[in-house]
Structures are given as structure tokens and as C-alpha cells.
Length: 285
Image (tube, rainbow, N blue to C red; front, side, top):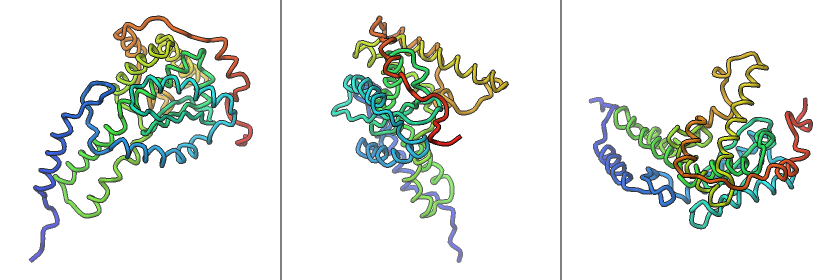
């Protein structure tokens, strides 16, 4: 007699429901809001970040070689991290040697900005705003949330479909392709809200987050016009991984009742003097 290959394992279904129910009661101490991170612990986040760091360097041209600019970014980032609300916060800030305009974070405190993005910042407060937003993603554990939901989705697919040993083994690898994807609009707003809090805590002007977003929008539109394409049709770029709008950033600033603060425009531009713009000659034509 043939044994049916499609089985609905009731034990697995019960386990998934139990885990999901338990996770609903988890509250992130930084945000004060429920956070579904059951399948990725802080220790796992640190291991993921350390493992993926080398891959990021390979993908984005390595570390930008100017130690003064790298040190400057790390100093500004360190001020933000000290106000992150994370116990025993450990962050590593890296400038990537690529003309691409982007910034992102890996779980475990690995925060990256590209030299292409640095070239567009008009003040230290704008740089601080970029770093504060990424630190907000780490503090809110957004990657752990996304990974945990992917695991639940994988369990659901396994429950409803054919379950094999290979499929069950793949559940542990669901997050490998998720680390550098863009976050949801809700997560972006939460990172903005935390970022505004961090800027206030370090004395920077929170409105710099909005002014930098205007610069990014202008750069995106200019690049599109030069390429003779519709800006809305362009894939990739900053807004591909940061589905943010100026209205949403302004809302985060207004809801926080954010006041004025330090901007440091001239000193910032002096620190970035000599920054390579465009393609790096050392990487070929």
C-alpha cells in the first residue's frame, strides 16, 4: 500500500499557533510597542550581522579608505548610539566605497552609509539624521521581526502543503535574503520616530531629517531627467530600500514636538573636503 506524501502535521500546526500566540505578548523595551521577534534572539542578530558584514563589503566596494572621514562618521554615530536606549549598545559604523546613494543597517548594530550619500549631506545634523534612522531600525529590531514573520509564513506553507525533511530544514534559512531588503512603511515611520528622539537627545536639529530627504528627492529627480526617464519608473536607489515620504518624516518630527538644535553646516563640509565623488578611479573606468 502506498503511503501518502502530502501530510498535514497537526503537531506542527499546534506548535506554530502556540509560538505565534506567545510572541504577541513580547514588547520591545525601546519602542514600548509589541514586537514579534520570537525566532531571532539578540545573540542571533549579532551573529547574523558579523556573518553578513563581509558580504556587504564585497557588494559595495569595500570600506572607503579615508580614515578621517570614516572616523568622523563613527564619532557622529557614536553620539546617536549612546542615546539609543539599547542596553550595552554596540554599533559599528562603516562608510562604503560606492557612488550609490544609500544607507542601511544589519542586525547586531552594523550601520552603513555610502560615500555617494555622504556627498549629498549638507550638515552634520543631516548626517546624524541618516544614522539615527538606521540606529532606529536596529533598536526596533525590524530585521528580527521580518525574519520571524517569514519563519511563520514558512511554517504555514509547510502545514498547508507537502512537508518534507528538506523543506523543514530550509525554515532556518528563510532570513538570508531578507537582511538588505527595504522595510515596510510602518517600520520606516517607527525608525523616523526613534531617529527624531535620538537627534533631540544628542542636541541635533531634528528638522535636518526632512531637509536631507528633500535633497535626496531633488537628486533622484535630477538623475532621472539626465537619463531621460520618469523618476517614478526608476528601480533601485535610496527610495527603493527606504519607502519614505517627506510628509511621513515631517509627521514624526511634529508628533515629537521637536525643537531646534545644532546643525553644523560649515564644519561638516570641511570634514568632507576631498571626498571622492562618482566612480573611484582605483576601481577602473
